[in-house]
Length: 568
Image 1 (cartoon, helix red, strand yellow):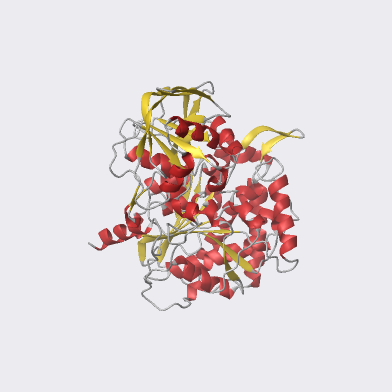
Image 2: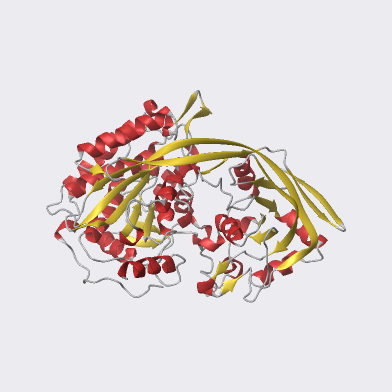
Protein backbone atom coordinates (compact mmCIF):
# COMPACT_ATOMS: atom_id res chain seq x y z
CA UNK A 1 0.00 0.00 0.00
CA UNK A 2 1.39 3.41 -0.88
CA UNK A 3 1.25 5.79 2.06
CA UNK A 4 1.31 9.56 1.70
CA UNK A 5 1.39 12.30 4.26
CA UNK A 6 -1.12 15.08 3.66
CA UNK A 7 -0.41 18.68 4.57
CA UNK A 8 -0.98 20.76 7.66
CA UNK A 9 -4.64 21.59 7.21
CA UNK A 10 -5.78 18.00 7.47
CA UNK A 11 -4.03 17.88 10.84
CA UNK A 12 -5.86 21.02 11.90
CA UNK A 13 -9.15 19.28 11.22
CA UNK A 14 -8.07 16.47 13.51
CA UNK A 15 -7.77 19.00 16.31
CA UNK A 16 -11.45 19.84 15.94
CA UNK A 17 -13.20 17.01 17.40
CA UNK A 18 -9.86 16.24 18.45
CA UNK A 19 2.85 -3.56 12.43
CA UNK A 20 -0.02 -5.81 11.65
CA UNK A 21 -0.70 -8.75 13.92
CA UNK A 22 -1.83 -12.13 12.70
CA UNK A 23 -5.12 -11.83 10.85
CA UNK A 24 -8.21 -13.02 12.67
CA UNK A 25 -10.38 -13.33 9.57
CA UNK A 26 -12.21 -16.62 9.43
CA UNK A 27 -13.21 -16.20 5.79
CA UNK A 28 -11.33 -14.87 2.77
CA UNK A 29 -11.95 -11.19 2.05
CA UNK A 30 -14.76 -10.64 -0.38
CA UNK A 31 -18.14 -9.08 -0.90
CA UNK A 32 -21.29 -10.26 0.76
CA UNK A 33 -24.56 -9.37 -0.93
CA UNK A 34 -25.23 -6.90 1.88
CA UNK A 35 -21.89 -5.17 1.43
CA UNK A 36 -22.28 -3.94 -2.15
CA UNK A 37 -21.43 -0.23 -2.18
CA UNK A 38 -24.33 2.13 -2.88
CA UNK A 39 -24.49 3.48 -6.43
CA UNK A 40 -24.86 7.04 -7.77
CA UNK A 41 -28.60 7.26 -7.15
CA UNK A 42 -28.04 6.28 -3.54
CA UNK A 43 -25.35 8.96 -3.27
CA UNK A 44 -27.82 11.63 -4.36
CA UNK A 45 -30.32 10.34 -1.82
CA UNK A 46 -27.73 10.43 0.96
CA UNK A 47 -26.73 13.99 0.10
CA UNK A 48 -30.36 15.12 0.25
CA UNK A 49 -30.77 13.38 3.61
CA UNK A 50 -27.68 15.07 5.01
CA UNK A 51 -28.92 18.48 3.90
CA UNK A 52 -32.32 17.93 5.48
CA UNK A 53 -31.06 16.74 8.86
CA UNK A 54 -28.22 19.26 9.16
CA UNK A 55 -30.59 22.11 8.33
CA UNK A 56 -32.93 20.96 11.09
CA UNK A 57 -30.43 20.16 13.84
CA UNK A 58 -28.36 23.31 13.21
CA UNK A 59 -31.34 25.67 13.20
CA UNK A 60 -31.67 28.30 15.93
CA UNK A 61 -34.64 26.41 17.35
CA UNK A 62 -32.20 23.86 18.82
CA UNK A 63 -30.26 26.57 20.68
CA UNK A 64 -26.86 25.06 19.95
CA UNK A 65 -27.72 21.59 21.35
CA UNK A 66 -26.05 22.07 24.72
CA UNK A 67 -26.48 19.14 27.15
CA UNK A 68 -28.85 19.76 30.03
CA UNK A 69 -30.77 22.57 28.30
CA UNK A 70 -34.05 22.83 26.37
CA UNK A 71 -31.87 22.45 23.28
CA UNK A 72 -31.05 18.92 24.38
CA UNK A 73 -34.72 18.08 24.91
CA UNK A 74 -35.57 19.16 21.38
CA UNK A 75 -32.54 17.39 19.90
CA UNK A 76 -33.08 13.98 21.44
CA UNK A 77 -36.79 14.11 20.62
CA UNK A 78 -35.89 14.70 16.97
CA UNK A 79 -33.38 11.84 16.99
CA UNK A 80 -35.93 9.40 18.36
CA UNK A 81 -38.58 10.53 15.87
CA UNK A 82 -36.26 9.99 12.90
CA UNK A 83 -34.94 6.64 14.12
CA UNK A 84 -38.50 5.45 14.66
CA UNK A 85 -39.44 6.52 11.14
CA UNK A 86 -36.63 4.32 9.83
CA UNK A 87 -38.07 1.31 11.62
CA UNK A 88 -35.36 0.99 14.25
CA UNK A 89 -35.98 -0.22 17.79
CA UNK A 90 -35.05 1.41 21.10
CA UNK A 91 -31.44 0.39 21.66
CA UNK A 92 -31.14 0.32 25.43
CA UNK A 93 -33.20 -2.67 26.51
CA UNK A 94 -36.44 -1.12 25.30
CA UNK A 95 -35.43 2.49 26.00
CA UNK A 96 -34.25 5.04 23.44
CA UNK A 97 -32.14 6.81 26.04
CA UNK A 98 -29.12 6.06 28.17
CA UNK A 99 -28.88 8.57 31.00
CA UNK A 100 -25.46 10.19 31.43
CA UNK A 101 -24.89 11.84 34.83
CA UNK A 102 -22.55 14.83 34.60
CA UNK A 103 -20.80 16.88 37.28
CA UNK A 104 -18.98 20.19 36.86
CA UNK A 105 -16.19 21.20 39.27
CA UNK A 106 -15.06 24.81 39.01
CA UNK A 107 -11.94 25.69 40.98
CA UNK A 108 -11.43 29.24 42.26
CA UNK A 109 -8.56 30.93 40.43
CA UNK A 110 -7.02 32.43 43.56
CA UNK A 111 -5.28 29.16 44.47
CA UNK A 112 -1.52 29.34 45.10
CA UNK A 113 0.79 26.36 44.67
CA UNK A 114 3.47 26.65 47.34
CA UNK A 115 6.73 24.74 46.84
CA UNK A 116 8.97 24.63 49.90
CA UNK A 117 12.43 23.27 50.64
CA UNK A 118 15.35 24.02 52.92
CA UNK A 119 16.72 26.56 50.44
CA UNK A 120 13.69 27.02 48.21
CA UNK A 121 10.51 29.03 48.62
CA UNK A 122 8.21 29.51 45.61
CA UNK A 123 4.56 30.56 45.52
CA UNK A 124 3.27 29.92 42.00
CA UNK A 125 0.24 31.95 40.97
CA UNK A 126 -2.63 30.67 38.85
CA UNK A 127 -2.34 31.42 35.13
CA UNK A 128 1.19 32.35 34.11
CA UNK A 129 3.12 30.20 36.61
CA UNK A 130 0.83 27.19 36.99
CA UNK A 131 -2.68 25.88 36.55
CA UNK A 132 -4.28 23.63 39.13
CA UNK A 133 -7.60 21.78 39.27
CA UNK A 134 -9.22 18.59 40.48
CA UNK A 135 -11.52 15.86 39.22
CA UNK A 136 -12.75 15.17 42.74
CA UNK A 137 -16.36 16.24 43.07
CA UNK A 138 -15.79 17.93 46.41
CA UNK A 139 -15.91 21.52 47.59
CA UNK A 140 -12.37 21.39 49.00
CA UNK A 141 -9.29 19.43 47.91
CA UNK A 142 -5.75 20.06 49.06
CA UNK A 143 -2.14 19.04 49.45
CA UNK A 144 -0.34 19.66 52.73
CA UNK A 145 3.45 19.48 52.47
CA UNK A 146 3.31 16.59 50.01
CA UNK A 147 6.86 15.43 49.06
CA UNK A 148 7.80 15.81 45.39
CA UNK A 149 9.07 12.82 43.38
CA UNK A 150 10.28 12.91 39.77
CA UNK A 151 8.91 9.87 37.91
CA UNK A 152 10.04 10.71 34.38
CA UNK A 153 7.18 10.18 31.95
CA UNK A 154 5.01 8.57 34.63
CA UNK A 155 4.44 5.45 32.52
CA UNK A 156 3.77 1.89 33.62
CA UNK A 157 3.63 -0.23 30.44
CA UNK A 158 4.30 -3.92 31.18
CA UNK A 159 3.96 -4.90 27.51
CA UNK A 160 6.87 -2.55 26.75
CA UNK A 161 8.89 -3.54 29.82
CA UNK A 162 8.74 0.07 31.03
CA UNK A 163 7.86 1.20 34.55
CA UNK A 164 8.72 4.70 35.70
CA UNK A 165 7.34 3.90 39.15
CA UNK A 166 9.59 0.90 39.75
CA UNK A 167 11.20 0.78 43.18
CA UNK A 168 9.47 3.77 44.72
CA UNK A 169 6.35 4.30 46.82
CA UNK A 170 4.50 7.48 45.86
CA UNK A 171 1.48 7.06 48.11
CA UNK A 172 0.54 10.48 49.50
CA UNK A 173 3.25 12.17 47.45
CA UNK A 174 3.15 14.51 44.47
CA UNK A 175 4.71 13.18 41.27
CA UNK A 176 6.39 15.46 38.74
CA UNK A 177 6.04 14.07 35.20
CA UNK A 178 7.00 14.91 31.63
CA UNK A 179 4.43 15.22 28.85
CA UNK A 180 4.34 12.80 25.87
CA UNK A 181 6.40 9.57 25.90
CA UNK A 182 10.03 8.48 25.37
CA UNK A 183 9.40 7.75 21.70
CA UNK A 184 8.92 11.44 20.94
CA UNK A 185 11.97 12.43 22.98
CA UNK A 186 14.27 9.98 21.19
CA UNK A 187 12.66 9.96 17.75
CA UNK A 188 13.48 6.26 17.68
CA UNK A 189 10.66 4.20 16.10
CA UNK A 190 11.75 1.25 18.25
CA UNK A 191 10.99 3.23 21.43
CA UNK A 192 7.24 3.20 22.04
CA UNK A 193 5.94 4.36 18.61
CA UNK A 194 8.67 6.85 17.88
CA UNK A 195 7.20 10.24 17.01
CA UNK A 196 3.65 8.86 16.95
CA UNK A 197 2.16 9.51 20.37
CA UNK A 198 0.76 6.57 22.31
CA UNK A 199 -1.88 6.95 24.99
CA UNK A 200 0.94 6.79 27.52
CA UNK A 201 1.94 10.24 26.30
CA UNK A 202 -1.43 11.90 26.90
CA UNK A 203 -1.86 14.14 29.93
CA UNK A 204 -5.01 12.25 30.88
CA UNK A 205 -2.99 9.04 31.22
CA UNK A 206 -0.47 10.78 33.52
CA UNK A 207 -3.24 11.60 35.99
CA UNK A 208 -4.83 8.14 35.71
CA UNK A 209 -1.61 6.23 36.34
CA UNK A 210 -0.60 8.46 39.23
CA UNK A 211 -3.97 7.71 40.84
CA UNK A 212 -3.39 3.97 40.40
CA UNK A 213 -0.03 4.40 42.12
CA UNK A 214 -1.66 6.19 45.06
CA UNK A 215 -0.18 9.64 44.47
CA UNK A 216 -1.87 12.63 46.11
CA UNK A 217 -0.90 15.13 43.42
CA UNK A 218 0.57 15.48 39.94
CA UNK A 219 2.60 18.28 38.39
CA UNK A 220 3.02 17.96 34.61
CA UNK A 221 5.90 19.90 33.08
CA UNK A 222 4.72 21.72 29.97
CA UNK A 223 6.93 21.93 26.90
CA UNK A 224 5.38 23.08 23.65
CA UNK A 225 6.88 20.54 21.22
CA UNK A 226 5.99 17.33 23.07
CA UNK A 227 2.63 18.72 24.23
CA UNK A 228 1.80 19.86 20.67
CA UNK A 229 0.29 23.10 22.00
CA UNK A 230 1.49 26.20 23.82
CA UNK A 231 1.09 27.25 27.43
CA UNK A 232 -1.86 29.43 26.45
CA UNK A 233 -3.88 26.29 25.71
CA UNK A 234 -3.08 24.89 29.16
CA UNK A 235 -3.84 28.21 30.85
CA UNK A 236 -7.15 28.69 29.05
CA UNK A 237 -8.19 25.12 29.77
CA UNK A 238 -7.42 25.61 33.43
CA UNK A 239 -9.83 28.53 33.58
CA UNK A 240 -12.81 26.32 32.72
CA UNK A 241 -14.83 24.07 34.98
CA UNK A 242 -13.79 20.42 34.83
CA UNK A 243 -16.73 18.44 33.47
CA UNK A 244 -16.84 14.76 34.30
CA UNK A 245 -19.12 11.82 34.84
CA UNK A 246 -20.87 11.88 38.20
CA UNK A 247 -19.32 9.39 40.58
CA UNK A 248 -20.83 7.78 43.68
CA UNK A 249 -17.50 8.16 45.48
CA UNK A 250 -17.17 11.74 44.15
CA UNK A 251 -14.05 10.64 42.24
CA UNK A 252 -12.17 9.98 45.45
CA UNK A 253 -10.15 7.45 43.44
CA UNK A 254 -8.67 10.23 41.30
CA UNK A 255 -5.59 12.28 42.17
CA UNK A 256 -6.62 15.00 44.62
CA UNK A 257 -4.69 17.79 42.91
CA UNK A 258 -3.80 17.95 39.21
CA UNK A 259 -1.56 20.68 37.89
CA UNK A 260 0.79 21.91 35.17
CA UNK A 261 3.80 24.21 35.35
CA UNK A 262 5.70 25.87 32.49
CA UNK A 263 9.23 24.76 31.61
CA UNK A 264 10.82 27.81 33.28
CA UNK A 265 9.26 26.98 36.65
CA UNK A 266 10.29 23.33 36.25
CA UNK A 267 13.90 24.29 35.60
CA UNK A 268 13.93 26.45 38.74
CA UNK A 269 12.37 23.62 40.77
CA UNK A 270 14.92 21.05 39.64
CA UNK A 271 17.80 23.46 40.20
CA UNK A 272 16.59 24.03 43.77
CA UNK A 273 16.70 20.25 44.24
CA UNK A 274 20.27 20.13 42.93
CA UNK A 275 19.26 18.45 39.66
CA UNK A 276 19.88 19.56 36.09
CA UNK A 277 16.51 19.46 34.35
CA UNK A 278 17.91 18.73 30.88
CA UNK A 279 19.94 15.79 32.16
CA UNK A 280 17.01 14.41 34.18
CA UNK A 281 14.57 14.61 31.27
CA UNK A 282 17.09 12.96 28.93
CA UNK A 283 17.61 10.13 31.43
CA UNK A 284 13.84 9.67 31.68
CA UNK A 285 13.72 8.78 27.98
CA UNK A 286 16.18 5.90 28.37
CA UNK A 287 15.36 2.34 29.51
CA UNK A 288 16.25 1.72 33.12
CA UNK A 289 15.32 5.19 34.36
CA UNK A 290 14.93 5.31 38.15
CA UNK A 291 12.52 7.76 39.83
CA UNK A 292 13.87 9.92 42.64
CA UNK A 293 12.73 12.49 45.25
CA UNK A 294 13.31 16.15 44.46
CA UNK A 295 15.38 16.69 47.60
CA UNK A 296 13.20 17.81 50.52
CA UNK A 297 10.83 19.95 48.46
CA UNK A 298 7.11 19.69 49.20
CA UNK A 299 3.89 21.01 47.64
CA UNK A 300 1.01 22.69 49.46
CA UNK A 301 -2.21 23.98 47.91
CA UNK A 302 -5.88 24.35 48.81
CA UNK A 303 -8.57 24.25 46.12
CA UNK A 304 -12.01 25.72 46.78
CA UNK A 305 -14.48 24.29 44.28
CA UNK A 306 -18.06 24.84 43.13
CA UNK A 307 -19.79 21.53 42.33
CA UNK A 308 -22.95 21.20 40.21
CA UNK A 309 -24.78 18.25 38.63
CA UNK A 310 -27.03 17.59 35.62
CA UNK A 311 -28.25 14.65 33.56
CA UNK A 312 -27.87 14.30 29.81
CA UNK A 313 -28.67 11.46 27.41
CA UNK A 314 -27.15 9.23 24.79
CA UNK A 315 -29.68 8.13 22.16
CA UNK A 316 -29.49 4.47 21.12
CA UNK A 317 -31.28 3.03 18.07
CA UNK A 318 -31.02 -0.65 17.21
CA UNK A 319 -31.34 -2.81 14.12
CA UNK A 320 -31.34 -6.35 15.59
CA UNK A 321 -29.22 -8.99 13.90
CA UNK A 322 -31.04 -11.78 12.07
CA UNK A 323 -28.71 -14.58 13.25
CA UNK A 324 -26.43 -13.18 15.95
CA UNK A 325 -28.37 -10.42 17.71
CA UNK A 326 -26.01 -10.46 20.69
CA UNK A 327 -23.08 -9.34 18.53
CA UNK A 328 -22.99 -5.70 17.46
CA UNK A 329 -21.35 -3.17 15.17
CA UNK A 330 -21.62 0.36 16.63
CA UNK A 331 -21.75 3.66 14.75
CA UNK A 332 -21.23 6.78 16.88
CA UNK A 333 -21.60 10.53 16.39
CA UNK A 334 -21.95 13.22 19.04
CA UNK A 335 -25.14 15.27 18.89
CA UNK A 336 -24.06 18.06 21.26
CA UNK A 337 -22.49 21.44 20.62
CA UNK A 338 -21.78 24.60 22.63
CA UNK A 339 -25.25 26.04 23.18
CA UNK A 340 -26.00 29.72 23.71
CA UNK A 341 -23.25 32.06 24.91
CA UNK A 342 -21.80 35.46 24.01
CA UNK A 343 -20.96 35.52 20.31
CA UNK A 344 -20.14 38.02 17.60
CA UNK A 345 -22.30 40.46 15.64
CA UNK A 346 -25.21 39.83 17.98
CA UNK A 347 -25.36 36.08 17.24
CA UNK A 348 -25.01 34.10 20.45
CA UNK A 349 -26.16 30.65 19.24
CA UNK A 350 -23.40 28.17 18.46
CA UNK A 351 -25.31 26.07 15.92
CA UNK A 352 -22.60 23.49 15.20
CA UNK A 353 -23.78 22.66 11.69
CA UNK A 354 -20.64 20.83 10.67
CA UNK A 355 -19.61 20.05 14.26
CA UNK A 356 -21.48 17.81 14.62
CA UNK A 357 -24.94 18.03 13.08
CA UNK A 358 -23.22 16.57 10.01
CA UNK A 359 -22.03 13.41 11.76
CA UNK A 360 -25.38 12.99 13.49
CA UNK A 361 -27.14 13.30 10.13
CA UNK A 362 -24.83 10.58 8.84
CA UNK A 363 -26.28 8.17 11.40
CA UNK A 364 -29.70 8.49 9.77
CA UNK A 365 -28.32 7.75 6.30
CA UNK A 366 -26.41 4.74 7.58
CA UNK A 367 -29.50 3.45 9.34
CA UNK A 368 -31.56 3.76 6.17
CA UNK A 369 -28.94 1.93 4.10
CA UNK A 370 -28.94 -0.96 6.55
CA UNK A 371 -32.73 -1.18 6.73
CA UNK A 372 -32.96 -1.26 2.92
CA UNK A 373 -30.49 -4.11 2.43
CA UNK A 374 -31.76 -7.06 0.40
CA UNK A 375 -30.65 -9.26 3.28
CA UNK A 376 -30.78 -7.94 6.85
CA UNK A 377 -27.51 -7.89 8.79
CA UNK A 378 -26.75 -11.10 10.65
CA UNK A 379 -25.27 -9.13 13.52
CA UNK A 380 -27.00 -6.25 15.28
CA UNK A 381 -26.14 -2.67 14.35
CA UNK A 382 -26.37 0.05 17.01
CA UNK A 383 -26.63 3.72 16.04
CA UNK A 384 -25.44 5.67 19.07
CA UNK A 385 -25.78 9.46 19.21
CA UNK A 386 -23.68 10.44 22.21
CA UNK A 387 -23.76 13.51 24.39
CA UNK A 388 -21.11 15.81 25.89
CA UNK A 389 -18.29 15.20 23.44
CA UNK A 390 -17.46 18.87 23.67
CA UNK A 391 -17.02 18.45 27.44
CA UNK A 392 -14.52 15.60 27.20
CA UNK A 393 -16.09 12.60 25.41
CA UNK A 394 -18.39 12.04 28.38
CA UNK A 395 -21.33 10.38 26.65
CA UNK A 396 -19.18 7.86 24.83
CA UNK A 397 -17.08 7.27 27.92
CA UNK A 398 -20.23 6.52 29.91
CA UNK A 399 -21.25 4.02 27.27
CA UNK A 400 -17.79 2.41 27.35
CA UNK A 401 -18.04 2.02 31.11
CA UNK A 402 -21.72 0.99 31.01
CA UNK A 403 -22.12 -0.81 27.67
CA UNK A 404 -25.50 -1.95 26.40
CA UNK A 405 -23.88 -4.84 24.54
CA UNK A 406 -21.13 -6.97 26.08
CA UNK A 407 -17.74 -5.60 25.05
CA UNK A 408 -16.50 -9.04 24.00
CA UNK A 409 -19.48 -9.19 21.60
CA UNK A 410 -18.90 -5.67 20.25
CA UNK A 411 -17.26 -6.21 16.88
CA UNK A 412 -16.15 -2.66 16.01
CA UNK A 413 -16.91 1.03 16.35
CA UNK A 414 -17.01 3.57 13.51
CA UNK A 415 -17.12 7.23 14.54
CA UNK A 416 -18.27 10.29 12.57
CA UNK A 417 -17.22 13.76 13.68
CA UNK A 418 -17.40 16.95 11.60
CA UNK A 419 -17.74 15.12 8.28
CA UNK A 420 -18.91 18.28 6.47
CA UNK A 421 -15.95 20.47 7.45
CA UNK A 422 -14.92 22.72 4.59
CA UNK A 423 -17.46 21.26 2.16
CA UNK A 424 -14.59 20.15 -0.07
CA UNK A 425 -16.57 17.71 -2.18
CA UNK A 426 -15.26 14.34 -3.40
CA UNK A 427 -11.65 13.53 -2.52
CA UNK A 428 -9.20 10.97 -3.87
CA UNK A 429 -7.83 10.00 -0.46
CA UNK A 430 -9.02 8.59 2.86
CA UNK A 431 -7.04 10.01 5.81
CA UNK A 432 -6.81 7.47 8.64
CA UNK A 433 -6.34 8.67 12.20
CA UNK A 434 -4.19 6.17 14.09
CA UNK A 435 -2.94 4.56 10.90
CA UNK A 436 -1.87 0.95 11.40
CA UNK A 437 -3.75 0.41 14.66
CA UNK A 438 -6.07 -2.46 13.82
CA UNK A 439 -7.33 -5.02 11.33
CA UNK A 440 -10.24 -2.69 10.57
CA UNK A 441 -7.96 -1.13 7.99
CA UNK A 442 -8.22 -4.33 5.92
CA UNK A 443 -11.94 -3.62 5.56
CA UNK A 444 -11.30 0.07 5.01
CA UNK A 445 -8.84 -0.65 2.21
CA UNK A 446 -11.34 -2.80 0.33
CA UNK A 447 -14.07 -0.19 0.74
CA UNK A 448 -11.76 2.64 -0.36
CA UNK A 449 -10.65 0.72 -3.44
CA UNK A 450 -14.30 0.42 -4.51
CA UNK A 451 -14.41 4.23 -4.46
CA UNK A 452 -11.10 4.53 -6.31
CA UNK A 453 -9.52 6.19 -3.27
CA UNK A 454 -6.21 5.69 -1.48
CA UNK A 455 -5.59 5.31 2.24
CA UNK A 456 -3.16 7.88 3.58
CA UNK A 457 -1.52 8.19 6.95
CA UNK A 458 -2.71 11.00 9.18
CA UNK A 459 -0.30 13.92 9.26
CA UNK A 460 1.52 14.69 12.49
CA UNK A 461 0.73 11.49 14.43
CA UNK A 462 2.85 12.85 17.30
CA UNK A 463 -0.09 15.07 18.27
CA UNK A 464 -2.15 12.11 19.48
CA UNK A 465 -5.39 12.98 17.70
CA UNK A 466 -6.57 9.38 17.93
CA UNK A 467 -7.28 9.96 21.61
CA UNK A 468 -9.48 13.05 21.12
CA UNK A 469 -12.81 11.89 19.72
CA UNK A 470 -15.58 9.52 20.78
CA UNK A 471 -14.14 6.36 19.22
CA UNK A 472 -11.40 6.50 21.86
CA UNK A 473 -13.95 5.73 24.57
CA UNK A 474 -14.57 2.37 22.90
CA UNK A 475 -10.91 1.77 22.09
CA UNK A 476 -9.85 2.24 25.70
CA UNK A 477 -12.09 -0.68 26.72
CA UNK A 478 -10.67 -2.84 23.94
CA UNK A 479 -13.12 -2.42 21.06
CA UNK A 480 -11.38 -1.85 17.68
CA UNK A 481 -12.44 1.64 16.64
CA UNK A 482 -11.92 3.63 13.45
CA UNK A 483 -11.93 7.40 12.96
CA UNK A 484 -11.33 9.17 9.65
CA UNK A 485 -10.54 12.81 9.00
CA UNK A 486 -11.49 14.74 5.89
CA UNK A 487 -8.89 14.72 3.15
CA UNK A 488 -8.14 17.97 1.33
CA UNK A 489 -7.28 16.18 -1.95
CA UNK A 490 -10.23 17.53 -3.94
CA UNK A 491 -10.90 15.46 -7.06
CA UNK A 492 -12.21 18.50 -8.94
CA UNK A 493 -10.10 21.41 -7.70
CA UNK A 494 -6.89 19.93 -6.30
CA UNK A 495 -5.29 19.84 -2.88
CA UNK A 496 -4.39 23.52 -2.64
CA UNK A 497 -8.01 24.53 -3.15
CA UNK A 498 -9.13 21.93 -0.61
CA UNK A 499 -6.65 23.23 1.93
CA UNK A 500 -7.94 26.77 1.53
CA UNK A 501 -11.51 25.57 2.00
CA UNK A 502 -10.62 23.75 5.18
CA UNK A 503 -8.52 26.62 6.47
CA UNK A 504 -11.43 28.97 5.92
CA UNK A 505 -13.69 26.75 8.01
CA UNK A 506 -11.17 26.42 10.83
CA UNK A 507 -10.34 30.12 11.02
CA UNK A 508 -13.80 31.54 10.48
CA UNK A 509 -16.38 29.00 11.64
CA UNK A 510 -15.05 26.24 13.91
CA UNK A 511 -16.55 26.64 17.41
CA UNK A 512 -18.04 29.96 16.38
CA UNK A 513 -21.67 31.07 15.93
CA UNK A 514 -20.99 31.13 12.17
CA UNK A 515 -20.83 27.32 11.94
CA UNK A 516 -24.28 27.50 10.37
CA UNK A 517 -25.97 25.49 7.66
CA UNK A 518 -25.96 26.77 4.09
CA UNK A 519 -28.19 25.07 1.50
CA UNK A 520 -25.42 25.58 -1.08
CA UNK A 521 -23.03 23.30 0.82
CA UNK A 522 -21.33 20.62 -1.29
CA UNK A 523 -21.80 17.49 0.81
CA UNK A 524 -20.57 14.95 -1.73
CA UNK A 525 -17.42 14.40 0.34
CA UNK A 526 -19.50 13.62 3.40
CA UNK A 527 -21.48 11.18 1.25
CA UNK A 528 -18.22 9.41 0.41
CA UNK A 529 -17.52 8.88 4.10
CA UNK A 530 -21.03 7.61 4.81
CA UNK A 531 -20.79 5.12 1.94
CA UNK A 532 -17.34 4.03 3.06
CA UNK A 533 -18.44 3.40 6.63
CA UNK A 534 -21.56 1.62 5.46
CA UNK A 535 -19.58 -0.74 3.27
CA UNK A 536 -17.22 -1.63 6.14
CA UNK A 537 -19.97 -2.10 8.69
CA UNK A 538 -22.19 -4.16 6.44
CA UNK A 539 -19.32 -6.49 5.59
CA UNK A 540 -18.58 -7.00 9.28
CA UNK A 541 -22.25 -7.41 10.16
CA UNK A 542 -22.50 -10.23 7.61
CA UNK A 543 -19.34 -12.03 8.77
CA UNK A 544 -18.08 -14.04 11.73
CA UNK A 545 -14.92 -11.97 12.04
CA UNK A 546 -13.79 -10.21 15.19
CA UNK A 547 -11.09 -7.74 14.07
CA UNK A 548 -8.17 -7.33 16.43
CA UNK A 549 -5.73 -4.62 17.34
CA UNK A 550 -2.33 -4.89 15.73
CA UNK A 551 0.77 -5.82 17.71
CA UNK A 552 2.17 -3.05 19.88
CA UNK A 553 -1.09 -1.11 20.19
CA UNK A 554 -1.88 -0.27 23.82
CA UNK A 555 -5.46 -1.60 23.61
CA UNK A 556 -4.52 -5.06 22.29
CA UNK A 557 -4.10 -6.77 25.67
CA UNK A 558 -7.53 -5.56 26.83
CA UNK A 559 -9.20 -6.91 23.70
CA UNK A 560 -7.38 -10.24 23.78
CA UNK A 561 -8.34 -10.79 27.42
CA UNK A 562 -11.95 -9.91 26.62
CA UNK A 563 -12.16 -12.33 23.70
CA UNK A 564 -10.41 -15.06 25.68
CA UNK A 565 -12.91 -14.79 28.51
CA UNK A 566 -15.71 -15.04 25.97
CA UNK A 567 -14.29 -18.31 24.67
CA UNK A 568 -14.00 -19.88 28.15
